Image (cartoon, rainbow, N blue to C red):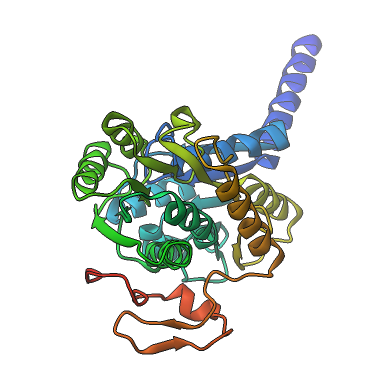
Length: 357
């Protein structure tokens, strides 16, 4: 009997120790707008999730849900993650902003981080990258390499993040080539390979020999490769499988250091709601290798522009710049403030077409 009691006591102790270990483990959730195999935006967020696991090992458990529509479905998924014991939840698309705020109110002890939005609370922080810095580099290459002087742009949704990118790319393409013009197609999706391929094909048919995209699949790269002689750029991820042509460079989103820092802050008890907006200089935005399809002088110019942005010597939105209607926006040498950029809802002068409402 004594032996049985001892064994039972030992089993109970082991069980309690296991339960304590499980409780000590920090649980981190990720809500993704696309599939983790999209080759772009969600792929890079998931790579950062894996980096968190590698960094913290058994001290952290990560969970994720992919292809979550923006809206009521997001609120349901977030609620389930919070109820499952998540300590920290990253919501990785603009349309998750209100669902994140709504669920955070119901779970004040859970920390939430929302990507690309602007609404915060005591337990909700926001983070984004200055993708427009990378667009400036792409715009320069596009302006220098186009032979038709027509650059096509596949846009996702008419939100400030996307509008900033179009403007930045156009400003720098125009500086490199005064004859350049942009044609923009709004796809109204982050990830829909069929729609993205159709948009790329339509732009090529309209004379574009350079395609930029703010959508997440590699379908535009494939459409460009099929057409031949078209230049593209990787979006969010390197998309290097299409190098050296059509993909001549890329914007790479590097989320891992940020995710690791924020998870560490939760573990340390030092996490606070904050807003982070970093770019090339901080390493959150990387420029993918410029391929040998780009002439050496153009590559040198693009790398010099990248370094100038990284050091702060050049800001992509520096006057003189007018709005599309010709009204003055920035005077000579004046730099756009973050508030205006965060809420950008206008095209700069020279871009044609209207921004959908």
